[in-house]
Length: 539
Image (cartoon, rainbow, N blue to C red):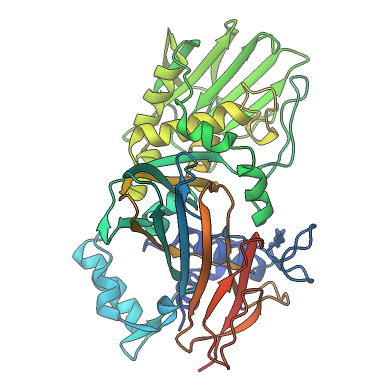
């Protein structure tokens, strides 16, 4: 059983008949590779009849004719393997590159039910025993075989220094990944086999959005789109501004004054049949041309720019849960603020009011940077993301700010999905969206000599959803670019395929020939992009 099949079995087994009828998706307790799980979730939604909108991306040919004559499309594009780059161009340094694509992770590995249960270290012993019993029912043979659709990439560079003196240079190795997957997709970098000390540089969001909004028409919806082809990455990196931004200082919003309304200790009657969802609504008057309102903790809202009114709402939590909610006002202050209780959430004007509700409201002045840091530091899900990625607060805060300032309510090109000013809309997506990152280090190449720099990484494939019934279903794609973003003068490049008898080639432009034993090929340096599509050989 493949990893994807096992997880889908676990997900489907965790759904009650009632949930299946509702089209609900089961979230497994065991932490998984989120991009893979997102694919399964989309597939599960389709199986349950809810429907899905597929995102087709180009993988092979481009408008310029590079690659295959026939364009290859995938619904999820994982990005190419990029070449090593120097901090500054140096005519004395040349490079020979060898890229090895190793399918070792495709080898099936036996996972016993005991191992599966023991891996749930976050559960109590009793809960782990329940997991073991469940897996013994699912897999009475004692376990299951798991394999991956990721591959191992070894990207090796022999750097040669033709100068008569040693050259100490900055090297940067780029890779495409969302922040949440850095633990698995972040490369390791070595020089002459020794680990190279590196600094991680985070690029901004690499995609865009399908819709924008104007000040006179807040609201609506729009979708993020990720880089859909290698050409998108080519355009992203073409003029150097994307890297320049990553190397530059973080955005600064500490000088932007805000008026803070802090809501604590919300209270109200308990939920019952007549009061299904006790809710607080905060209503206010404002001039939309002079005032911007950001919120945290509010999940409902109604906006009328013409009338100059706004409402924000949240469900009253259980008393022991508490909760802190914020409204941040930029520009002129709001007027006539009122806090009222209602029997349920939503924004319907005829919703019945609920007596005995309220909250402690504190008003004070601060600055935007201080408040964003305060809010994110108290956000449990944000802190969980920090733990999962292994990144520090400042790195993630910078990524949050870049997304917020580029597409949020303070941007001239604001996006519809962010029009309501909910800070939670940015927090999760900061970690989910694709971006280019760099590992940056320093090496010294001896005069007249050479130095080998090697990047090793796990590489996710481009793929179609298993239930999409496309011609590429069951095919996994991997690709690389030969020169994009690199100032290195290459004397040659070659690619090596370690297929291990596990795959057959569906399409490519490398020139591998498995039947003839051709697994090492020279790459044409004038060819910008190489790609490989494979399918698993059935046992």
